[in-house]
Amino acid sequence: MGKTDRFSFGEKIGIVEIKRAITQSADIIETLRHYVEDDGVKAIILRIDSPGGGVGPAQEIYREVLKIRSKKKVVTSMGSVAASGGYYIACASDMIVANPGTITGSIGVIMQFSNFEELFKKIGIKGVVIKGGEYKDIGSPFREMTSEEKRIMQEVIDNVHQQFIQAVAEGRKLERIKVIQLADGRILTGEQAKRLGLVDQIGNFQDAIDTATKLAGIKGKPQIIYPKKKFSLLELLIKEVASTMINFLNEKIFQLDYRAL
Image: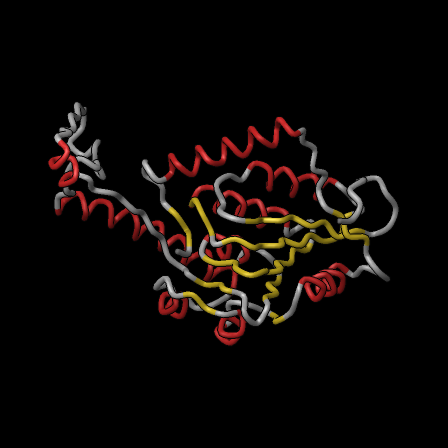
């Protein structure tokens, strides 16, 4: 897995792994800052294997990558999937390397609601909502959304969608109109993304390492390092329970997602 000692000798490339659904940004940002402070780390590789996730966390990581690019070279290596929010983050890097069959793209935003009104009627459950503000219970599972409420939510979705489009256009140096044509939520393979300018290079993780080595001007073979993972069995169980709770709650409340279904 590579060494993690920030004071070890030799030029290094730091690996940041972004896996599964993106639900938080703190750990990833902490790792990025750790590598920035380590003068021995000459480049950073984002190893992304994620279908995306929450808009907020993806934007926070994207922003942090943009800030560190003036200090370190950043290369993205895409695994099996780097779509939606995963691709959003990748756009902040200097170079994107994808496998030919990597699932990527899915430039879009989604917000889902459940309506249990008819079910509740059948089993004799009646929802009671007390609110201050006409639209405070938009998306309530107790009733159908009104046309005005749907319009309001669509405006929110459209605004966040435009933010995604802008991030791709700026990060990939593409004309906005071209990105708009691709930003309909479609998924792409790595090869398709390369032809469209959404990816720079076809290759695997080792190819990404070689690319980062050249970009950073590293002489010889770099030392590949990963962040230290410190946790006890109890902490592991707590994290697993917390993750399960977060995923459950995300299904019950509003959440904007850059996520490939």
